Image (cartoon, rainbow, N blue to C red):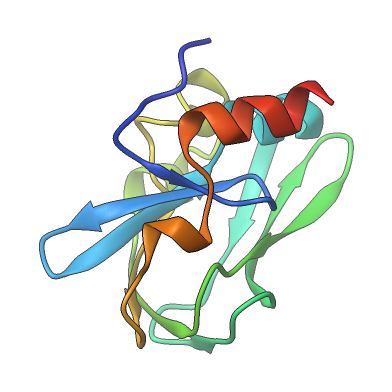
Length: 124
């Protein structure tokens, strides 16, 4: 699996990148591989979330896991394609974003992981 350079990674296996005036957010290939076949995503549109807390959850045939927020913000939009066919995350986790968010604070890339730093994290 190729990990894109143009996205920001977190220690919690979430990725995000700028999109219009907001950010799109998803889970990494590593996260979807650990989860197994994704069957359900639960996120409430317009809900607010706090940094390091769950902004939603993702369920697979094996387990359920929280999607951890990288920063304080609000859900702007849920990807209806992924909501109706969550297995798309397994097929291409970096192409199928889960939600669009508005972060309340400016994002400093130095506070997160680059592709190389993330790959180092998952190899340890």
